[in-house]
Image (tube, rainbow, N blue to C red; front, side, top):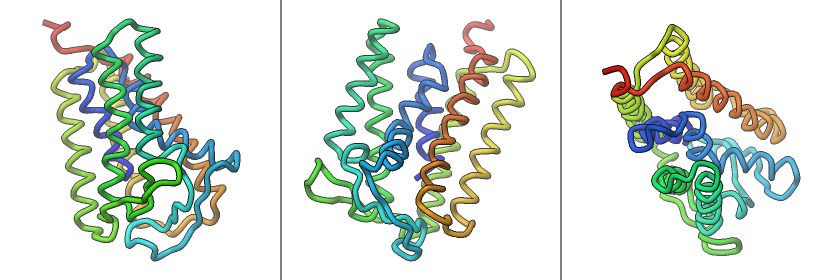
Length: 219
C-alpha cells in the first residue's frame, strides 16, 4: 500500500488540527521511512520477484524491526512520546501513535503472509495484492476520503496553499500509477533509495500545511 497511508495522514488532520500535515505523514509512513534505512544498512532484506503477487514484485524476506506488529507498537509509542515531550499535547501524541499503527494494519490487508507478529514470530497477511482491482479501489477510497477530510478542516491562505496541495495530490497519484503500471524496479538499492525520497513528500506536506489555515480560524 502507498497512497492509502497518506490518506490516513490527511484524514488525521481533522482529529489533530494543530499537528502539521508533514508530521502526520511521518507518522502514517513511519514504518516505510524506517525500512529503507535498515535495508541500506543491511539489517533488513528483500528481493525483486515479479509475480510473487499480482500487484507488487517485492518479496519481503526479512523486516522484523520495521514491520513486525510488536515493533510497530514500539515505534508508535516512541513517536507518541517524542511528540508529547516536544508539544505537551496528549491527544495529538495519541493520534500520531495510532497513525503509526494504522500503517501495519493497512499493510496486513494487502500483503501476503510476510508480516511478522514479532521478530521471529508467525507471518501474517491477507493478500489483497493478489486482487489488483480491489487493491486499487481500497487505496483510492482511503486516499480520497483523506483528501475530503483534510479539505473540510483547512483552507488555503494563499496560492501556495491551494496549488501546492493539489500538486501534492497529483504527484502522489502519479507515483501510485507508476507503482501499479510501471516495470519492476531494476534492483533492490534503487527501491531503497526511492523509498528514502518519500522525505520529499513529507517536506512538501509541511510547506503545504504552513500555507493553509484551519477553517474555524477564518470565521
